[in-house]
Length: 258
Image (cartoon, one colour):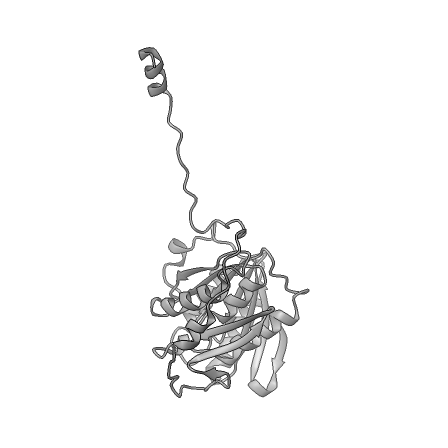
């Protein structure tokens, strides 16, 4: 190459390589992966503790479900209530499956708050949503395990996992100008804990105009009813369903226009 040509190339501005941030919606998965080795999961025998409400689905430490045309196996953690399956999660999955025409999650951006074991996020992913499952740091390992084992090679989008502590640094970690969701899903996030105010703040942060929130919860305590009262003051709220035998209510909510 002549010296003049080398100088010309050296003086040309270099093309910048733009790295898209993780929150940008990915393209659908196009490569089908091999079917999961379910025997590995079944072989991981865990002794499930006698927690708040033992599940009738328990078998060898695994919970088994059938949603969206797939068998789902959930590993629970013995370390925290947040990694157990509660009635609200099962109720919300049933509702989403039976009401797909009303709540079509295909190609929708979905955020789950307090994802726990990941059952709701798994079902949403199997229904074609682009899902971000969030929870506390100590929950994420088991959440990641369940999401990966039950969605790999089955879903249009690979679900994402993100750490989120309710009410903490929401504007910095999840700026509203960037993080916008079509749906927010919550299941049994309201129980006897000290973060109900922070939970409401977090829901307000993410539930913006154009967002639909679906929330299922078993009503256990008087504080649950108080939260519902405050929730209904903050959002346009509709009671979609009530499962009397499980004491579970399912709500739909949208942001109030200011």
